[in-house]
Length: 132
Image (cartoon, rainbow, N blue to C red; front, side, top):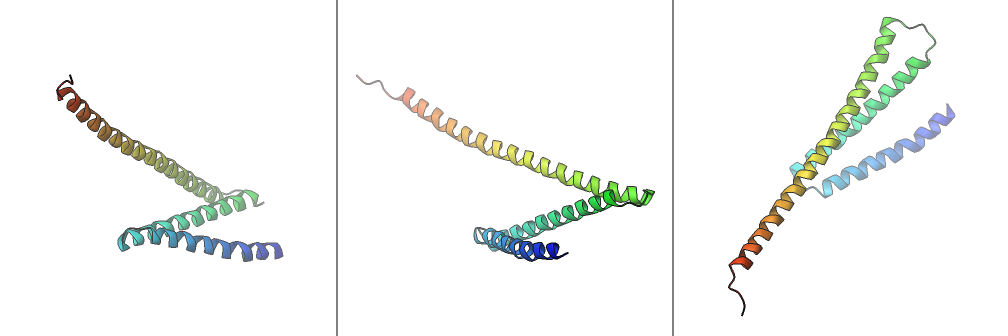
């Protein structure tokens, strides 16, 4: 028990400082107050998601290490956190894929703009009178 108290005495202040720093950076680099509020809300929701996932992992470990025979309720108590963690993982994976698609779309639009500029330059060169 002393080890847990010692670890919590170190981890909790470090986690609070990290969260505070992260939120201050999000707020400082936001273009306006509305964006800062939105970024803060998203950051707090992300932290709550991490805490809930950690809670689900603790429940799973506790259920698997419990020596009492399994009942329907205990199996349900194992399945719900499993599906919740799987759902969180799938949503994270989908978000990563969508961000990649978004980045690809930005790159393609920049390439299209560059191609338009090159075509315009080619037209200007083709329409220019020949040099003697």
